[in-house]
Image (cartoon, rainbow, N blue to C red; front, side, top):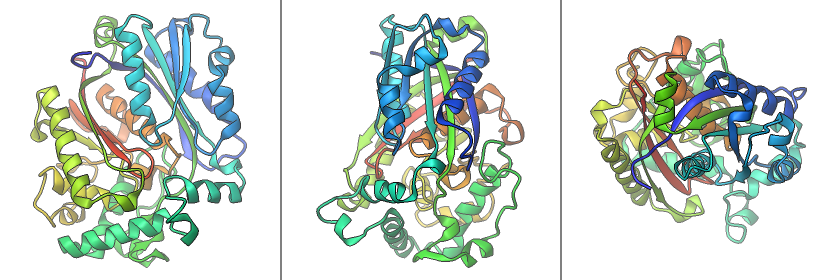
Length: 393
């Protein structure tokens, strides 16, 4: 397959939050109907359904794996169905599979949904799932290593090497929450944006990570309708067109990868995606990053040369990444601002990328946004998938 030939033409989403009365299938129905209607097509025009595998939801995963979504939605034109699991990179791979089906002529329109309802999963099951997922069961799990603990060590190391202060790290959270406060689908929509002092005064989880620097598990879901770039152009509707892509694999476990290896992966995958799109860093209007914890953002910013080493924290602190700033950054606030919906954070970022390029982002709309850089990462950060998206007009 040559140059990317994919466009997002329809999106649907429900607010992230704790909604135990909102069932998984309620979310699937609502988001898929929204996406199909937004695309301006009939539901029977959907010829394939490729679903992001729900995490820690085995019954729902089994139902989707055995083809329940097309039947439940009455998609009479559907020719094929599958489910994809690559952790937080699942949506990227759903899009790749969809692109293959579209390019080969097997499907004209593909529906890609995701749903997570953490609030109805028994707490012991949630704890056990996240205690084992992406953790080496022989060398890490017996000693109670957690993601918060591992990321705390990474954060401490980065701060030591770069000279970044706790205040500058907290400023990343403030930036994320600035965007989240404007997002009707965020768990923090309309809520007070914490100051740096408030972030640092929240309880310590694992030094130097405070409570407000860690993720909040939440319920949520979204869906997209995709087609070829040519079909999107003929439809004449607002769309997000994929212009370039690249990826790097690191390792299965956070503790077995080197910082330098990750930085090199950031640099090379980003450059290759931009080169394929025929663009440079300076052309990007929005950097839509999914890196889960605060520390990933300054590391990425510095790695690809958007600023000098040790200066990213100041950029966040000075408000350049905020709404209205010169460097719009993670316009849904990443998992810190949106709430963590398992593999769905990457889906939410793709929906946001499309929303910005379609001009449908409301108060968060970045003026004249033409090019968006988007990434996803799976598992414990096992890989980095870089994509560049543009408007279809």
